[in-house]
Length: 287
Length: 287
Image 1: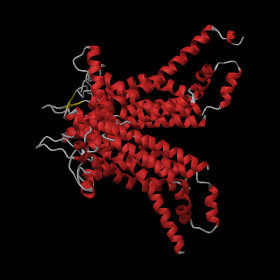
Image 2: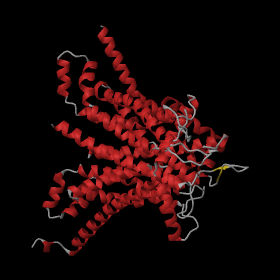
Image 3: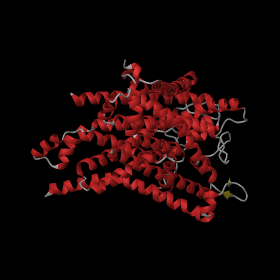
Image 4: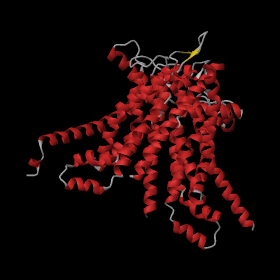
């Protein structure tokens, strides 16, 4: 009876919309699947121990990406070391200290603005300010500082979200026991927002790993093997920048695909880690 | 007393950390304006914005960026035209219809899509899209506006899907129940009740997509060919972002200043988009 009450036109509309929705979802998945498999299939056969463990040399035509791997690791460490205190501190200020509503909205608006600015603009301003004005030259440190500005909103947001889950009663309890504000923050608030900071770290690592436009003019394109501090002071290409150069400027697609496959695997791992951490933290909070 | 001073100092430190974000936005804005104005005043605002010829390395250089502006607008519009329907329908499917298992799989695929570095998109585009377009449309070079549009459409999918899902899930259950009780089928309810109720959030998703598309540099640089033509679907073109990136490494004098001016124009576009985004997000919250 009920079926008959639906006219043919409505039935047609329903099946059309259903078909279109499923088609779109399938298309989205197909694109992801295609890119992932294509990159892995073309890249993995080109990954060799020699590629991973040597530096490129014009003399014997050797191609190695060890310097690029190290530069990437250095820049990730340097960026996180700077962005975590600033981002988490800003979040603590917004949720714990700030009493001026105007100021809060200005800071939040600034963070939103930062997250909308394209990376090429970060690269340009980073080059003008860090490399030229502060005279750091093209160096990993200049690149890392540029990335700090880029990732600030991410760390701020994740920390703020986890701070909101710290129950007010904890703070009140600590205050009631006579603890000062800083003591409450150090012993009650900060331990409670560790999960937000960790999530922020993971998201930032993912973003740093994938960033290229902001690093092209700040961190440069050199492939030199350096220690950590020496590396920070010198120019160095991260994996993404190296990929761009091997593909676009040199036309060496084998190396480019090998790097792309490595980046792809790392992206997969980071996504997995982010999901896993999210699940663990959620369970712990509910427990 | 000593304690009070200590607390004030800590408060001050957190305040400074909070203000760093605002400082960064000011730094970027001020630097872009200071470095972008000289070339515009030398070339002339009208000539700069509406000049149709960009020949920065000629003996008699001409700096008209209309081709870049139009390319960026056309490219973004194309990406939105392709990406929004697919992303929107996928979002409705995931938010309302998909079984939990499928939803998990597709959302993971979408977050992977968001995590893939832009140079990897560029690389796959170079080796799959460009030859594909060349043979399919029988043109001498596949590096074209069309290739850039397809890459951008894929790259903005995650933003559109995620923001739309959030908006759709925020629609009060009562609305849908009322519609179902009146005899509408579930699919009709989703498209005629849930979607209109979430329209501000979906608009925000589209605007976010516009911001992503207009700011992307590296992937576009690898597939669009980078010739300063007026935009045409099957011709090599240069976007605002790629105009900055492609000449920065060897530019000097007025040419370099003109690149900063292009970045300023791009920045103004982004600020406009951010303001629109905030407008829709705010309205979504109020609803």
